[in-house]
Length: 392
Image 1 (cartoon, one colour):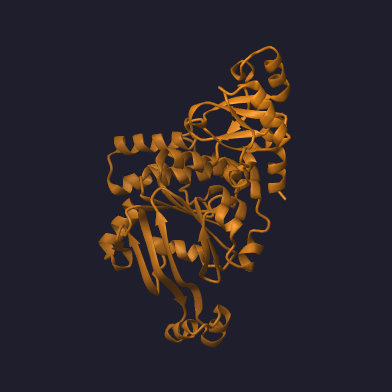
Image 2 (cartoon, rainbow, N blue to C red; image 1 turned 90 degrees about the vertical axis):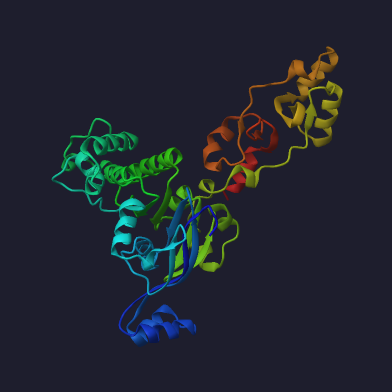
C-alpha cells in the first residue's frame, strides 16, 4: 500500500437478505438493484466499491437516500460487516480482526460523530468529552486536561460544567466533535453531522471543521447529501448511487469532467464559485514589463495589447505592481523610470483561492486581480469579466 493511504477499500459489497448467493450471481451478470430485490428479496446495499482514502484528507461521500453512503461508512468501523471484499487499515484487513483487535481498533484508531449527537444527558459537557478516555482507563487528571483542550478547540471554553440540556443544537454537535477528537483517532467518521442544524449554524460548523482540520491534520470521512457542503469540505468527493461508486475525484475535476449524465444532473445545483479555483479561470497577462524597461517601451506594450495598464515585475517574475499608460506617458515626458511610477498597492490572490472568496475583491478593484504564488511571482490575472463568466 502507498505510504499516504490510510484506508483501502477493495471490491466491497454488502447484501441484506436470505438469497445472497443468487443475488450475487444476478448482480454479477448485470442485473439492477431493483431487479435483484424483486426476484430474490435481497437488498444490494453496496456493490463492488473500491477506493483509497489518504492520510490527512477530508474525504466526502455523497449520494441520495438509499445510495449506500451510510452503509459504506459503517463498514469502516465494522458496525456493518461486509458480505465480500476487503477493508485495509494501514495494510491490516479489519474484517479479519478478532474481538480484541476490533475493540482496540474502535477505541484507538477510529471515532464517529453522529447526526443526533449521541450525548449523555446525565453528564455535563466535560463529562461527555472525557468519556471515551475514561473507558480507556486514562487517569482523571490526564483525561480532563485533554477534554478541556478539545472543548477549547471547538469553541466551548467556559462551558465545561454546563448540562447538555442547556445547549443549542450547534453546541451539542461541537461537544460530540470534541468527544471524538479527545480520543485522538487516526480516522474520524462523520455521518451527516450538520444536517439537523439550521443553515447559519451549519455554515459555522463547516468553517469550524475546516479550521480544526488545519490544526490537527486528521483523516476525516464525511457523509452528506448536500452537494455544496460536499464540495466546500472535501479534498476529494465520492458520488454514490444504488450502492455503487459512480465517480471519485476532486470537486473541481468533477465539475469539469462529470462521469455521466447522472453526475451532471446531481451537481447541477452546486455553487460553482465554491468549487472552481482562480487557477482554472485566470488569464495569462500579455502586458508585462520589467522595472528596468523604459516608459516608452511600456507605452508600446500597452498600446499593442489595447490595455491601459501593464504589470511591472522584477527578477524571477516577482510582481512589483502596475504602471498605467497615463503615468507612463508622464514618466517619459519627465524623464522618470518605471520604478518612479509603479502602483504597488494592488489586489492580489493565490492560484488556489476559490472564486467565491474573491468576488468582493473583484467588485472593488480598478485593475484585474494579479495572481501570485507563495514567493510573489506573477502567475496570471483575473478580471471582473473572468469572474462573472465563470459563474454562468
